[in-house]
Amino acid sequence: MINKKNLWFLTLFSLVLVLSIYYVTMPNEVFDKDLSNKESETTSTEIKESSVVASLKVEDDTTVKEKINSLKEKITDKSVSIEEKNNYFEELKLINKNSSKEETIETKIKEMCSCDNFVKIDGDNVRVVLDSDDSNTSKANEIMRLVQKEFDNKMYISVKFN
Image (cartoon, rainbow, N blue to C red; front, side, top):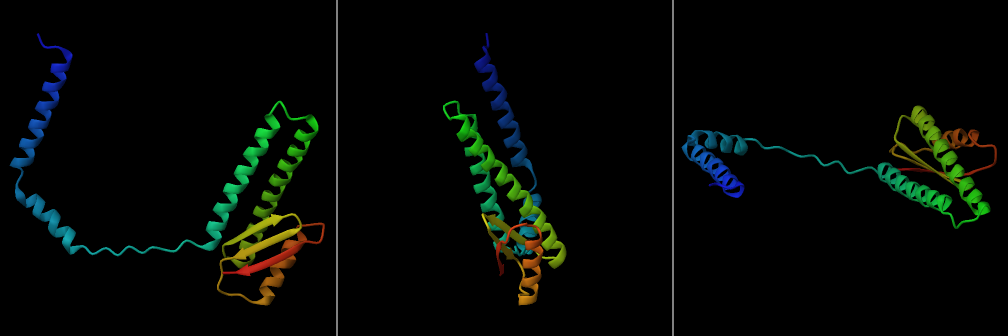
């Protein structure tokens, strides 16, 4: 009597046998056509260097997510006092407020300059990085005024062109 192991072996062996016979009996013209097409095609792959702005955004996103996760862990920790939890919660609110303000400033700058940009708020410092070859002081001043309108307090704003 054939048990399950032998049945599986026979099934797989017959499948391999059928496929190998099919492969051997195929005409060689099919393989020749594939090789000739590969030889005649010369594809040029253009690798675009990733922009500084994109890498800054990715780096900032990862650090913000890590900070938010660590704050959430501290808030949910039972051994932490209520006062410390409130401080962590306020810090979490500040991070969310800053990130939303960064996004609004980025969209306004993109509308004004039509170029990719990165905005980072750190306390009273605001760093703006533009992915633009066109760097002039009047454009930088306009961006600084636009950013300052978003804040009530005086901010230290730096604008960098790439």
